Length: 180
Image (cartoon, rainbow, N blue to C red; front, top):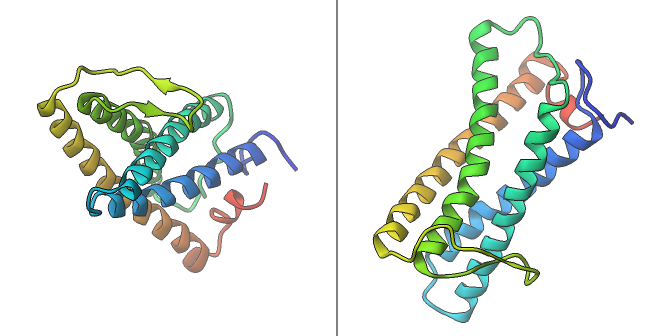
């Protein structure tokens, strides 16, 4: 089992980070969509708290994942892929890094602007990064929501591309993110 990536395959750390992030993001999306529709209640506050805590975890993990990617090879895309498709694949991955970083930051900014603390599972509380301000809260709420829908679209595109490689091309593009 390889720890680091090679020019052909991802290593166990990159695979772990990919799938733990996928699990967290696929938890956050329905959680975020459900919690905003609930009437004000203790349950809603608990879900908001969990959403924030998982957001802080995602922020920490995306920093680790980006750092790991910088110091590792990125396996080559199949030679038969046209240049535009390779460019699109790289652009989607870069967009993932951007949005997986920007989502927790905009959520943190929204909470700061609302005057609501962001705790990490009761271990520590993040400092406010913007002053309490209703206009800022609304702005960051809109940005956060828009980014969420863009991230959902990127996930759909990413999954569709992985399945296309698996079912149409029968190559190892999907398999190399499953097996180190």
